[in-house]
Image (cartoon, rainbow, N blue to C red):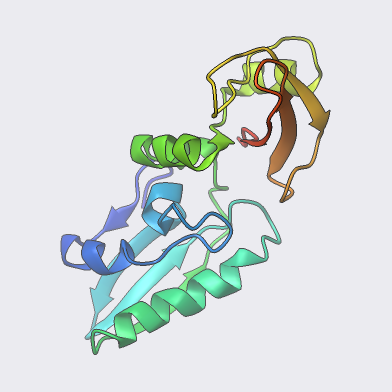
Length: 166
């Protein structure tokens, strides 16, 4: 297994696509990039997942949901949590980033831009409602620890920004 690509047997993809992130239900676990490996060994699907951050409370639910998704297809599955390499927002797929925006959550910027935005140095976080970058940081923490709360100064709407994690 490499650090930048997941190894997922193609026959398992359709089932894995049915498992949503419990905190952001418009994203699948494949969109989020938390599935690092999914292979079949001796008729048991072995799935390795990486948390978006250490201690993420959604990982137990995701593991249970993966097992249930395969059980619904008559397939036994095991889930293993792996911590290295650490998950990064780079693993969110392009379709996942688009789904985030459509759901009302601003997609993560790159590492340098993220720091500038979270320190209030630059207005570069795009409002998912009106696309303005005339936005301000309200709180370093939004609805979950991996998000920050912003407000658009043009449309006046609050929104979460998914922080860049490297």
